[in-house]
Amino acid sequence: MGEITGIKTKFYREGATQGTFEEIAQVASITPPQPEREVVEVDELDPPGGVRKKLVGLIDAGEVSLTLNFDPTNTGHLDLEQDFRDGVAKQYRIKLPNGYGWTFSALCTAYQPQEISAGDVVQAEVTLALTGVYTFGEITDGV
Image 1 (cartoon, one colour):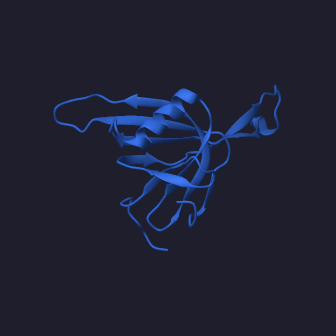
Image 2 (cartoon, helix red, strand yellow):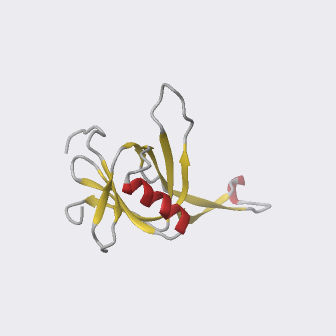
Image 3 (cartoon, one colour):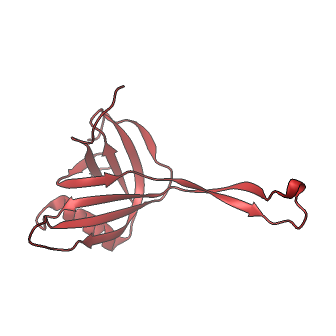
C-alpha cells in the first residue's frame, strides 16, 4: 500500500439501523484517535540502582476531533449536536480513501461553533471521547 493524502476521507455515524452508517457531509478536518497508556510510578526510598520503578497502567482510548463546515440544515450536523445533548455513546467511522479506517464507540463531549468572521467559513468543532478500544482495518460494509 502506497502513500495517500486525506482527500476523499469520510466520516460516518451509525444510523437508525444498527450496523449501517451514514456519511457526515462537509467535514473540513479529522484528528483520528490518539490513545495513550498510563505509566504508574512506584516510589521507593531505596530503589535498585536509584531508578524509579514503573508499571504499565490503563489505556486512555483517546479522542477524535472533527471540524465541520457548519450547515444548520445538514441532518448529519444536527445528529452530532443531538449526540452531544443526549450523552449516549454512538458508533462512528473514519474511512480513508484506500478503504481502511477506524471504527469506534464514543461520547460526543463537545459541539462548539467557532469564531465567525467575514473572511472565513463558519465552522463547528466536534469532540468525541472513545469509550473503548477502536478497531482499525478495511471498511467494506455498512457504509
